[in-house]
Structure formats: C-alpha cells, structure tokens
Image (cartoon, rainbow, N blue to C red; front, top):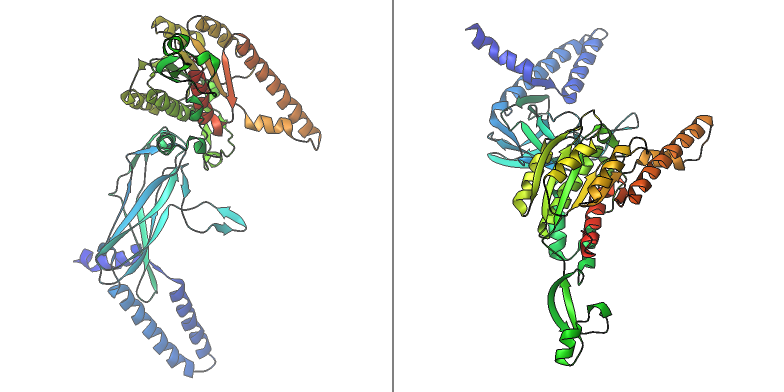
Length: 480
C-alpha cells in the first residue's frame, strides 16, 4: 500500500525538473509575499497567485505526456570505420495524444569524436565539443529519426551507455526526462573502408584524379600482349610489330596490357615506433584527415586496406604479414575479394607492442614460404642509421628474391619545428634538435635506397593515396 502511494511521488522527483519558466513564476510569487509585509492587500493576492501556480504546476505535470508514452532507440552499421565519420541514428516513437519536441542524448564510448549539424557552442569564448544528440519533433502516434556522426580513433569493440531523453510539458513548467538501455550497445571499429568505396565510385565514373589516384597513366602501358592495331603517329617506335607490319605491308602497332598475375605482400610493423601519433595535414581528398588523430599503425592499416583492394581488383595476389619482435600473423598471397576481407579481419585485431621490430625474423619467414617474386611493401618507421641498421641488413637479404618498397610516415611536428623561426634560445634549441633528427632519418632512408629498396616517405594524410599511386606506377612500368 505504501509503495503504491509513494510511487507517483518517486516518479516526480526522479524524472522531473523545474523549467526556467516555472522558476520565474515562483520568483514572482516570492515577490508578492515580500510585498505583503508592507501592504497587507498583497497577502491575499499572494495566496491566490501561489495557489493557482501550484494547481497549474500539478495539472501540467499530470496531464502532459508521460515517459512511458515514448520509445527511443539507436542504430548504426555493424562495422564502424576508423578515423572517419560514422552515422548513428537516434529514433523515437510517440504514443501520446500530443506532439512533443524530444531531445535525445547518447552515451558514446570515451575518446570518440562527435560531429553533428548543430551550431557551434561556446562557453567563456571557448568552443565546446559537439554533443551526441538529436532534437526530434514527433507528432502523435508517429516516429521520426535524427542522425549524429561518430569518429572512432581506435580499433576494437566499444560499448555505448544508455540513451537519455528530455522534453517539456504542455505549459512548459517542467522538464520530464528518462533513459533507456535496451538499444544495441557494442560497436566494432574496423580499419577504414570508405576509401575503398570512394575508389570504386571514382573508377566507375572515371574520376580517379578527384581522389588523387593516377590510374589513367596505366592506359596503353604494360608488357603483356593484348592485341594488334594500325600504327598511329602517337605510338612509340618500340611498339611497332615489325613481323606483322611485313606481312600486311603497313605499320602495325602492338597493344599491351598490365600484367594481372603478379604478387604483392604487405608487411606491417606493429612495433613500438608505430604506436606514436601521426600529425596529419588536410588532404584534398579527405576533409577529416587533419581532424582525427590516429597512430602511425592505424594510418598504415588504413593504407593497407586500400592497397590490398586495388591490387586485388587488378588481378594480383595479395598477402599480409604482421610482425613486431616476431611474426604475429601471416596470410599467404591469394587473389580475389575474399582475400581482401580476410586481410581486413586480420588488421582488425592488430595492436602495437612496446617492443622493437625484428625485420630479420619477418623477412626470413617470408623467404621460407618460397613465394614467387613479389613486391614486398613494408610499412614501418625510421629514426636514424643506428636504429635502422637491422632493416638495412635484412633488406639486402630480401632484395635478392623480391622487389622491396619501404613506406614511412614523416614526422610533421618535427618538420614544423625544423622550419620555424626561433624567437628565443629555447626555440633555437628545438629547431637544432629537429634538424638533427631529420638529418639522421634522411640518412637512413638514403642508405635503404642505396641497397635498392624503394622509398616512400609522406604525410599521414596522403599515405593511402601515395602508396597506391606508387604501386600503380611500378605495375605500369612492369617493375613488380
């Protein structure tokens, strides 16, 4: 009996807040009580006013829509993409007899960035981060949806909290609020595959240059015979087929196509140096690159996904080797999109370890597999000659059997320090140290190049496109 008696009171205190409008009306009632001390006539007026206000507040609370009239939920894709905006949909259904303006706020995983379409919020001239929320105007017996976007900066499984909702009563004297925790709560963050979709759309529409790729340079190049045709003045002399020309009595050119039966192995360093954060500049094809801090390993993983997809779409076999102080996973080279999916699954769980990479073990494992001659793309990081000595020695062994390409992310913060104008002695010291670091790193890269290893050293924001362009260039020249 007591529980039934106090349950409405408990619901009031737990789920109800006074609005600024009610606070203003209560303040006016307090003024009337103060005035009654000087003029007794205000005492009767204060009793009447406050009685009416109390009755209005009770009726407003009682006859406004109740939290049980609403159903709220969230929905999102099973797999979120790392480092790019992912849409999260907030939905609500109104079973009340009145239209309601409902504000829904989500509890998102820590360290995820939020993007929405609301105007910027400021507090003491400081820009506040966007909130994961949506404001919905819901008509009676209808449902509607709103969207905000989440930018994950780590891979793995992450848990959402509860959904919180708030709305105003009919007269606007109270705010009713409630929460629900029965929506999907686990998000799986995978390497970014949006670049793959952009590649497919650009390839279909013939707009490869819009995303920074130079696939057009492949046209008419290669070393594999495709067909014969009449000679034109734009053809190179080396493409003239003299035997066919002699038989037909006119010049005949040979069409070549890009070889499709080639092999590429991607070696990914998961050691200590790859755990550092990559400072990114905004890339012309990726408006979010500079806004999403990622580790060097995650940048390399995103580039690996795009490279594997492009290579598989061009008919090449793609393999993957993950290593740190030992080999953690190896996928033998295979063709097809099924292999690309397996590579993404393998990359999903890759995490950097606080150990030094063992290049010799990685390359010996690769050589022991007796793989046909391949392009071996190694994503790693270099500091100086001393730290990269093992990579130099191991690359010499690898070059005897495979073509090697070493891909590194340059240190944008160090480059900026080296280019700054020193304003004091501390800045001068920072500039000198930055230049020394850059000189050591450049020396290590040059030594690798002297061993016959291809070098690609770019900004984090350009890593994916630059790597694919280098692969396409090597393939077009028959250098794989």
